[in-house]
Length: 286
Image (tube, rainbow, N blue to C red; front, top):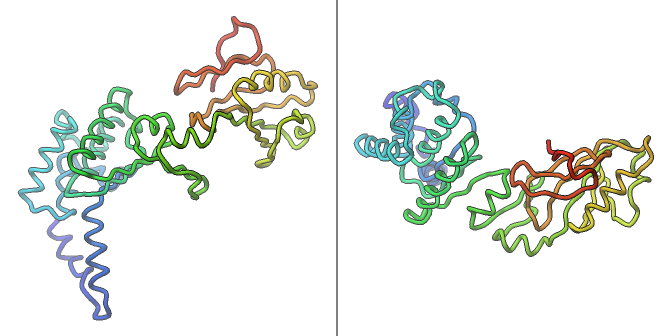
């Protein structure tokens, strides 16, 4: 740590052309921002205890304060049982908790967390969100998590920003977004280029890519649409996918669009969308 500081200590010096203020501001921004990446490679040979202490030092805490911060975060996140084992020897869940503790180290005012609950069991996921919420309320830290789980986002986040291809598609509180987007579900059908003419004409189909067609349908109309798709001529039947979107803001639910069409059960939330087929047929979800 001290050797690295001596080697790189002149990086923030002014070059005499107005560079001092931007360098100082950049340094302040780095020391006040905690970041959780999905890759622990840079720290993989350290123990959680050493990694948390080093992170606190890199963010400007003195040695004694960094040691206190390490002890507090190990206790706060329950790392004591494996705090002296190297990160690359930990399970996925243990390593994820250690990385979260590293993101919290130092006097950070902003925390950017990339998939903070990845690899955690349901109990640990709930605990992580609870503790992050406490950091937000008690210390005033702004927490920006990145998640691909809309249900999780709806439960725990105060404001949601939805990105599509790097562009902001929608932003607001979860309840506000649900009201704005309505209850329509998005239906996706995957097939070859010849599938288009056989799609039910009363729906506005959009060709979103090679062999990919999309439309919107109200929940009560989805069963009828499944029946229509299942009743096509045999040579027109193509594997397809179905998923909900719109106001529901649910994770994808996918099933082949070929008979027999069975009820779809979302693996994330358990919500079922009825489809034609024998009542005794097992659920289809992949």
